[in-house]
Amino acid sequence: VSRFEGVSMAPPDPILGVSEAFRADTSDVKLNLGVGAYRTEELQPYVLNVVKKAENLMLERGENKEYLPIEGLAAFNKVTAELLFGADSPVIQQGRVATVQSLSGTGSLRLAAAFIQRYFPDAKVLISSPSWGNHKNIFNDARVPWAEYRYYDPRTVGLDFEGMLEDIEAAQDGSFILLHGCAHNPTGIDPTPEQWAKIADLIEEKNHIPFFDVAYQGFASGSLDADASSVRTFASRGLELFVAQSYSKNLGLYSERIGAINVVCSSPDAAARVKSQLKRIARPMYSNPPVHGARIVANVVGDPTLFNEWKQEMELMAGRIKNVRQRLFDNLSEKDNNEKDWSFILRQIGMFSYTGLNKAQSDNMTDKWHVYMTKDGRISLAGLSLAKCEYLAEAIIDSFY
Ligand code: PMP
Image (tube, rainbow, N blue to C red; front, side, top):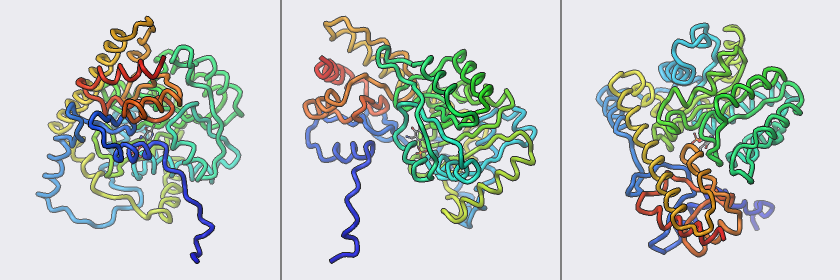
């Protein structure tokens, strides 16, 4: 008898479990719209050309594999904060950002969560309802209490802006408000710039601490600056804030686990102290981060030619997703005899679309049509090709009515 009799079987991850089910399906019409990873029009994974070029440079230089410092690669930390806030931003110029390279977006969120647990033991984190499923797991594991704020309005398949403001207003002063910098996951619904300004007003008034999760900078609109505008609005007001960054999507570095946590502080002195404590938390967790992805980012951003090429490839990826979004909308509008208004699909941004399909309807998508997606009605348009839009539209209409 095993000492592990008391260990029960954990449930499959609701997002990664979709891929497992997809692999087991033998149908040749099957479509995986579960995981948010970019595919080409041929539905193949894509390694960016700039990544290959940067890796070639790295090989030629024969760089060694010595440990990085706990806070990561200095050249990476510099460029990642500049990409986010803008190189001429006062927070950069005044040395008020504590940046620590971490294990992509997830690891950066986790590091910040541990910091919050330690230094703000009485604070709650407010998470949008719905949000990326892992957010709750991360704060649960870090023993940080959380609550939700309203975000999605099923009647309009749009933003419940009033509800969002009410819940942020009602939260205890000094709460952490988790915000998706752009391309909200899973809904694809973002506040407008005017709405962001009102959210910032309220957060400032309530003395809350904004905590941005930026997993799609440049990948949502195709522009690094446009996708960072929410964060920059808040930073330019002189607020202290957290930002977790990921290069999984915009550089296609999913498995390299490269990202960073940035804490904007009101003084360079506070930033130095915060950084020292983030390092102290990282050391017993994983000692120091991996170098490969950090070097890729530093090389791509640090070389004007590669940097421009990256921007072009990002526009290409974002553009392909926009084309698929438009085609899906066209096919839905064409095939739907019920005159339903599908234009909410065009108002969404980023790789995901919230279809408004409920669990039973999402089950029908998978069981009858072999379309794999999360049960909240989210589909990843990055896993869809123009050629498959018509089939998907048929499946959605059949499942919806
Ligand atoms: N936040 C959000 C909102 C995401 O969608 C993702 C990726 N699915 C992440 C964080 C983190 O991803 P990673 O750990 O690969 O950077």
